[in-house]
Image 1 (tube, rainbow, N blue to C red):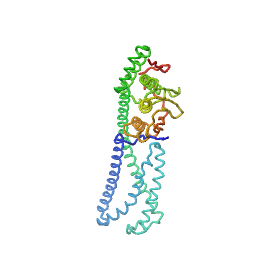
Image 2: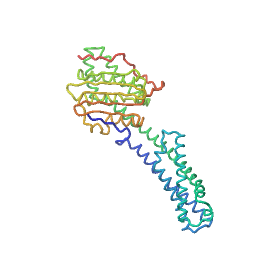
Image 3: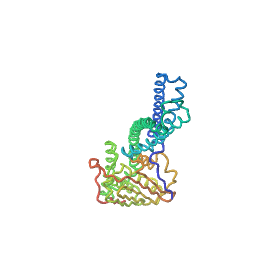
Image 4: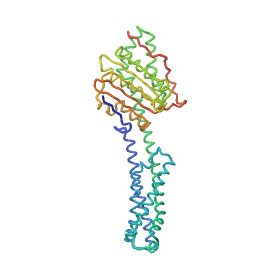
Length: 396
């Protein structure tokens, strides 16, 4: 059995906005880093030449020799800045980490300058020569610490700008992914093949079971209203209870179309009903099970939907005993599951995932895992009323 965990961020053209923003921020950082050191070099050189302490070649050599250690040290810190400026740390932990790093930086730089002085590369210095070795090291700690403080401020400033850019890119990307997911869900529910067969089944059902036909027409109207309000109000998250109900109605219409070829079982935990789920997430899973699992098989099959809630996670599992799939085909760009995976990555990062297990002829199981978050009362979606019992469709 093949088990695949979709990469929630990377893949396809939809990853471009976020990747481009990160690349652009990195280039701006290194450009600012280079310009900053060139500016410091120019200021010190100007002061040295103005005071007349040395000629131009000697001044350039001395300043370059003095600045090379801090340039290399700050380059090393800058290269690992993502590890030293983690968003989850918070302000005080970040300051504590950089206090340790800054002290290490200052001592290492002061010792390096002392080694250069001892070798004699900086030339004669009467004031420094009168001091003991450790006195010179302590004397150099102040400028070394000052250099790191300025550099740390530059890191914080550029990291703040980068996070703003990434945040904007993620918001834009999430909006694109959500719009594509919504459009795909609407197309799946109301593509010509689905609509034609549903209407044909309704025509037969009106004569055989008018009450069931009325419920089916209500299901069609509910799906249209649900998709319309989600798009018009730009709603991203809904209670799981609403997503379960709209998926029930979608599958009820598919049962109307496929008849005894489609059997559906549900197991939804009560504690999961008020938790947050992205709109159309569960519907994407059940639509995938019908389209790729049950419909290709003449004898049909069974779909099992299970929704569970723990203290920290919400899990939805959709399993069918249908045709299965080639694992490589599931990863094709534009596939509903791949689109959902990238949408989860944009919204939740690494705290959410969609995994699948399949092999040709071996059925298909999809597991959606989300953080267990209760939806705010003001975000309740009063679009769809729940039926107490699943609809039993009569077939004439």
